Length: 128
Image 1 (cartoon, rainbow, N blue to C red):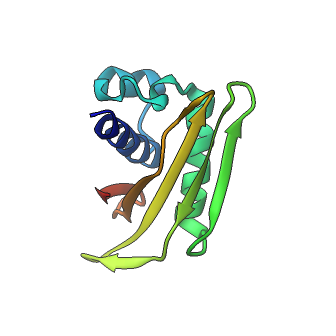
Image 2 (tube, one colour):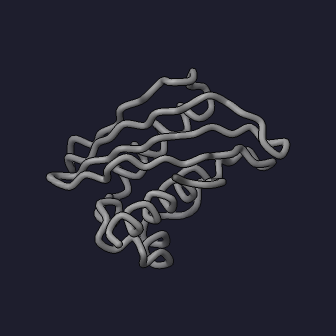
């Protein structure tokens, strides 16, 4: 159950983070299933660091490359890794791996297949 919550939480991070949807308060107001995951505890600066690393890699990262991100003020940090580009249903897609830490909590490895939509936003197509 906790793994399902963690994976669902990371899906929200990716979908919301990469599509530039509103402020953190709006995310958590609508996404109660983030409860009990480390992402629930991220502040706006944590989200900004994670989003920036993710977008940079998705847009320009070579297959297999990674970016570390951190917020020294909160201790939140992580690594984002990207796979090869693949075209699927006319969209540019790639597997992306997320590992995040906040204090003594770890997210574990989370894998998401992200596709670039017609609006130029990366969206979760599936996860494993």
